[in-house]
Amino acid sequence: MKMLRNVLVIMTAMCLSLTSCQNKQINEELAKYKELDSKEASNIETVKQFYMHLDKFLDEQERNAFTNMWSSGSKRFGGSSDESMSMEEMTPFLKSWYTAFPDLKHQILNIIAKNDYVVVQVKYSGTQMNEFMRIPATKKKIECKGVHIFKLDAGKIAELHFMDDDFSMFQQLGHELK
Image 1 (tube, rainbow, N blue to C red):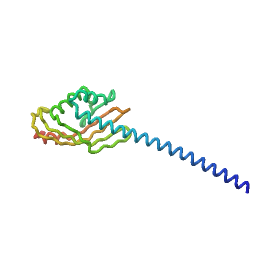
Image 2: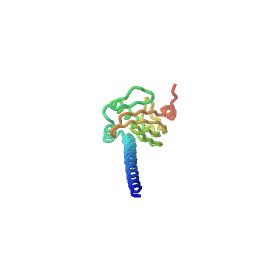
Image 3: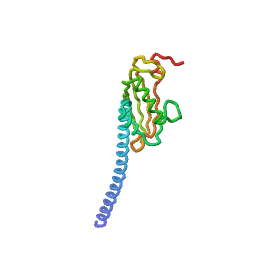
Image 4: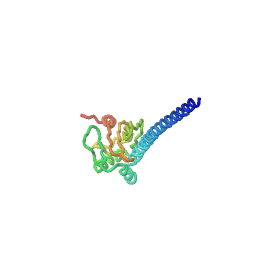
């Protein structure tokens, strides 16, 4: 009887030990997922800030905040281009957009984060009040969509790939592409 009791005590101790090890493993895994979830939420917030600063790009303070969101050596790819656009090239490009469409705004339709990547389906709209790409001011409103893929590193944008529906934009401005 005494031996049976000792065996039961040892077996109970082993089960508790095993359960404790499993709980530790489960807690470590849960902590890893919480950390990843937190990182993805932070990346989404960074991308939301990107659009907030972008839509006020003509304001020098906002433009500086926008520029500071990028990591050194960051890359920007538009359309199907394999050539990265430098920040020095991107600045006049964006200024031309916001000069031509002073009320240009981006609306996030869908946003998904996975690890270091954030994918955004965006709708942008504005009214062409000034010349844009040799098109005289039409005072026409555009509304187009795009998909933007961000890669973030340590809270900064390391890469951006953007594909916007420029064809629809030109049609809405009354131009046919030949």
